Length: 135
Image (tube, rainbow, N blue to C red; front, side):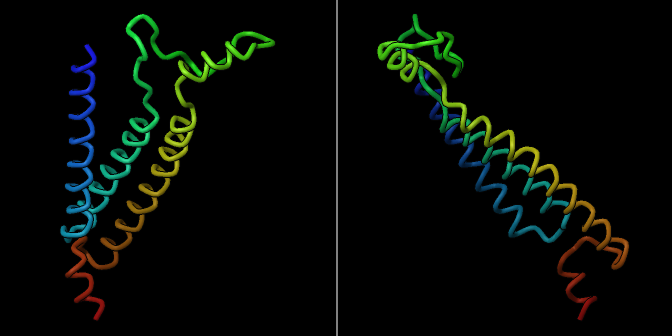
């Protein structure tokens, strides 16, 4: 079972880096502002999944899955804390991704608004034509 988990995790990482490459191509090589916004959204979602993958904690053994990061005893012993540190998932990447999703939504909405304004003023979303029209 461990080899299958390693294989699937490697496929996940490969596809994430492939997504990063495709989205960076879309951001830098495509002239349409709409396509740039879509590529930027794909890039931010891929970065969020990569942050979650960094915080992934593999199962130490099949009988002991990861546990939520909550200590249930009121006065834990050293053994309880050691077991907790070994078994609990890391909540920091999850909290950072949740914040990044909200910020990414706000940035995407702002960029869509700017693209609508560019289209309203210049009649196109092609950055090459906008640069020519502007002079």
